[in-house]
Image 1 (spheres, rainbow, N blue to C red):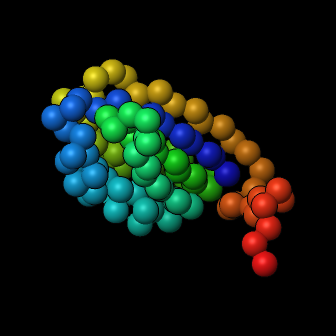
Image 2 (cartoon, rainbow, N blue to C red):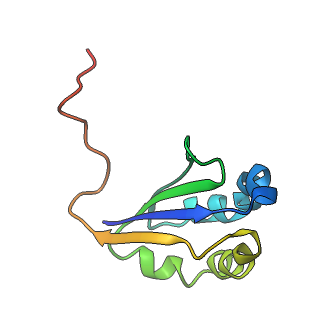
Length: 106
């Protein structure tokens, strides 16, 4: 699978509306056949930083970047950002989340 983590530093005036701003993009991406997950989190240390954790099948990431909703989001997002987002994108073995071995809940 293709595993991607992106950090978005949002302008202070956009922080409280980022979730709504990205909603259409999020819902459309989650509906893509190659998407495994697409989950946003907000930093507990910096309320202006949002982290996107996403995964696609091996052949699902390339079609994603060619969708209309991807083009629209990448064209509109810079107005809300302080800087260019940081990204880690890697192809890894697996098709989903594993259970953590160090913590077991009965």
